[in-house]
Length: 300
Image 1 (cartoon, rainbow, N blue to C red):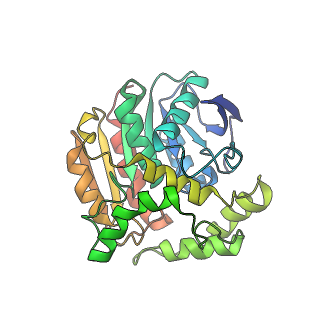
Image 2: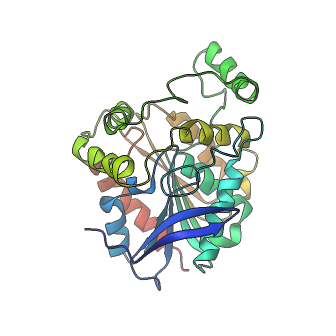
Image 3: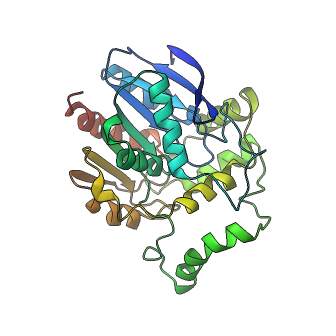
């Protein structure tokens, strides 16, 4: 069972971020950044306990617009969305609030994109970078297989700034069942889907915490689009970097990892056979030892 050392809301960057810490604060710090429309509790016991046992002080938190952190619905507008750069400043602000000089930055999906921005813009805060199932440029037309998809990727930034289209992504049903079904679709081909785990996680997220912001998915996606490409900036990353991606990821093509990982100096690419856009227990058995080895090589 997870034992929370400290929790609260940190005033950072004009908002409040809810955070929780685990382990001995004298140990090297890991900051876990979650992805699109996902609360921090998805980083569960099966992720955090092995990291704490390996000798790390672990922080998880809700990004803006999600969970117990500030929801931006009152001030947000598609013509002036916040960006991943803003969310990177949120993360750094949390480290500063907790008086942490440097940390290992670990991000999943959109969290990996935020982590990349931290490594680019705040190198003094970063011991290492781990970017999981992420991208250097989500709308990269080179990743799309069909001409229509390539054109759509180029049009998306124009469309979302000017046109609001009601759809299942921006107006989706908020329920435990709908989120479990979504994550079932994101699974890969090799590892068993742990429905009971996800049902427990989303019951806590939706029914016991503040709830799920129905606009988070769309507003955070707009942040991804507003930030554009990092491909020409990735060479600026000085921190040792581990890029992890599943070969069966149905949401963020593994081609993204193959494109952006070589652009980061001192980086290693780990492709996990059959893993989709989630970290099931079977995949964690392969991924966590690699992450721990990666972090343990760096002297804080």
